[in-house]
Length: 303
Image (cartoon, rainbow, N blue to C red; front, side, top):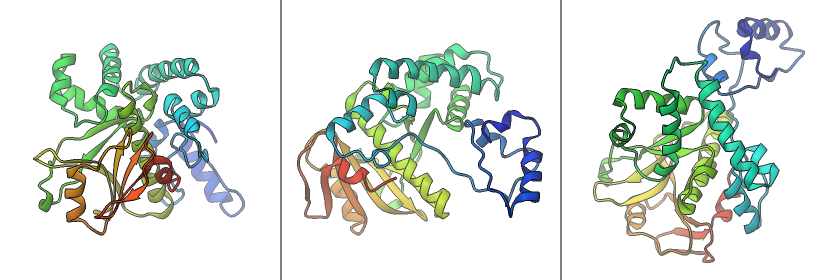
């Protein structure tokens, strides 16, 4: 069933079909992000389904092995329509239409928001903030809106899978910052800076893997980043059961490993650590166990 949540009594309908034919039929229900929100209300389907989140194409899913194919994915995004078109013009047109549909169709069916123009300005502003801790107060000043309004809009955009934010990883022994979240876009093609666009691509790949492990295996996973009060930073930290299992740093070329990465690795020496690049040629393991390589060596291990 596709888009069945547009039918008002869809839960009762599915519930009846499942209870009567569960031994004979398999049921797949697909739909937009609104389906994720609607499943929390009305008649419960608890115990009758498994929830799976569908993400854009990834390098592993597409079996990308060549640099030119990876560059195409970086330019066009992982959404099927723009990627399969193979055209940057088509990708840009699709991206504009996607943003408009998200705000003027999906969002307005869930929330009574009058100032859609300013909300669209927020969507345009967010790609410029990718890769840096988000200051909601600064966005409030730019858009002349209250902190409450901006926070609510960001929450809604996250629920509709327009953007996502990751929180800092903050154990006491690394004196980490506690509150500032970093924003990323599911459509990474709208990030103009190539280096930050690459970081955004990796963020979406990692979130896809984290959600896949959660949805299919039931493990408690989180995607975070590290930044301490002295400004040392590592782009991504993957946690399982609130303990770090992987550190990932993104670079455009063959940059040296940062002192911040060495600092974090020294405090968690057993954690798998990667510094991956979009255009780098180097492939080695540092003295403290950080693997430096091209990003495809890492991304192909994901889903």
